[in-house]
Picture 1: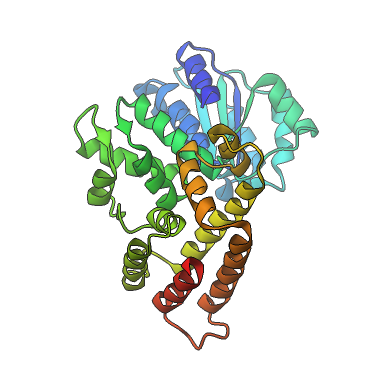
Picture 2 (picture 1 turned 60 degrees about the vertical axis):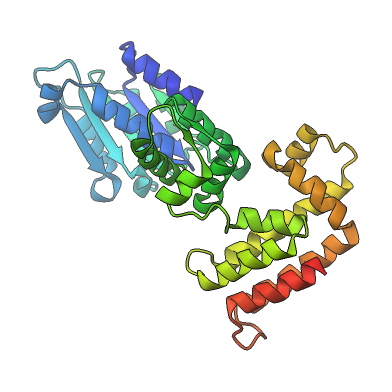
Length: 334
């Protein structure tokens, strides 16, 4: 995020590059930078003649270069934005010629999502020499809750740890979706408010009590009553709680629990780093480790594999998802 802040700060200071090549697996920051340039580099009255948005599927690299070579009309510069430029992957190397003989009054923005240029290639070196190449890297799942906290804090709100983790569980690592949901929440809540699990449940529709995060915790604690309530809820609401996701998350939990058992240093920070989880979760693992010795954990991973096969209709005579989960829970806890 600091790289993005620096790019925005430079633009605000008038230090604007002739080429911005925005690439990488995480589209969120590519869109953020592109949108900022689109909204802020030109004055509103200059945009009609001097700002163009193109799409990779509709143009060739040659057409992009022809457009970029034009002079601005009654303005200091023109802005040319190429969205979905990854559709030009087979011909993107042709941008080298433009980078080596560019139009200084043009700001060319290439949004090259889900892919990246090979740094050894001449086109990368040519663009990097005169412009800016930014790689937007995908966050790991255990980094997203901290990202949510930073985004929320930047807008003068706060969020409880459980609320952040509920969003991660429900929306995964899709930063754009998470950002949209946060914007909705912050438009509803009072300025400076704290986002709680209750506010997420009421406004986004994620249950604060019946979710995979709570199921995992209940199983780890061997809280049979709570785990059964959650599984019954999942059985009645299969669309929003698909069994495949539940089994996958439980499998990840017990696989990490196996790693936990093998650790010599079980301090909070060491465990969080070794398991690749938020430190908020470490207590869950230490409790679960007491309830599930290493041998039992290995058995549970086998039960989960069997349940995964059954959930896909193999050898289970099309058992309902709720029944598969009930059988799985009984095997895990007993």
